[in-house]
Image (cartoon, rainbow, N blue to C red; front, side, top):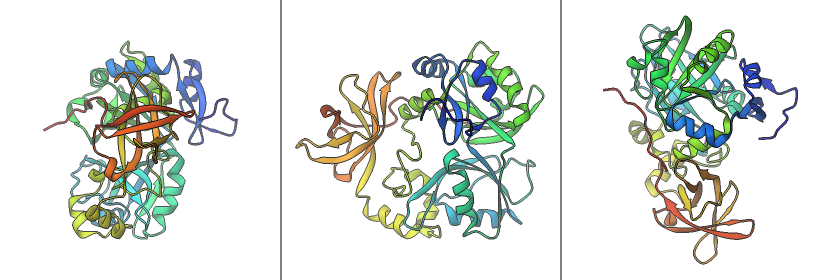
Length: 379
């Protein structure tokens, strides 16, 4: 991320609100977005204790439309290894978009609309900002039976934290109706929205999709609550790292398969047996034989942050991998990171040393997440 974004950067519908609130604007995914307001650590801690509001309108909201539900599911299952046929109305699923080599072109959330929300054959997906136009072209190429529409007229905000449901409950009943990885339409103090309940912070939280024209009103409504503070990209990054969650282009890319990335949950059990998705041959082979390298959590001694790109060495000083994300974690109160190491060295507790500006920082492979995830599941 670089400061002082150029004028050609895209702006979300909340750009003026960020500037007015003192947000320090940076470039991210081609957009001008706030990296922080009051400070990254303060925003991180507030999210863990109350509720924070993040502008994630840069993400790509896509509507997929086919002649019927079965056709749309078949098309999406060609592109991803998820079991999407088992999604009930109003359910969401995390998955990955794969290339023929089994590499990850992007990670995404697929949602089946709630009952009566959309016509038969319609599905929703959310993709990463920097990849959305790439993803649209990539998905449309092999799939001819459905259409993909990028909804740039929509904004997206994320209300995250243990008191997020309390805040939202003052304006609608959606938090009573949704559990983790569920979605439904709602009216929030007169504003029409589509709400999902997941969270890139490891906390309970809601993603609220609204028209760009309504974004400022919703922002004002939510930050007027004493429990809510606006938060930027910096806190979002430290929060997701503590939660053990990947960031595309850092912890995974088109040369890394989901087995190596330790994203086995993104590959449905039925799909492992049946295949039928792009890259299936390589992915299923790695599932059977095991990946050569694995994404692991890392915890280092002391408070020295070990950043992305730091070389990892074994006990003999031999290079074994690199850090893909790292920080000093405010909640865990430890220097934590994620990176890739040989599968033989991926067991929890295996000693690993990071080289930071030529100096060794001792550490070990650690269990993820680094802090407990606090998602709310409904029976």
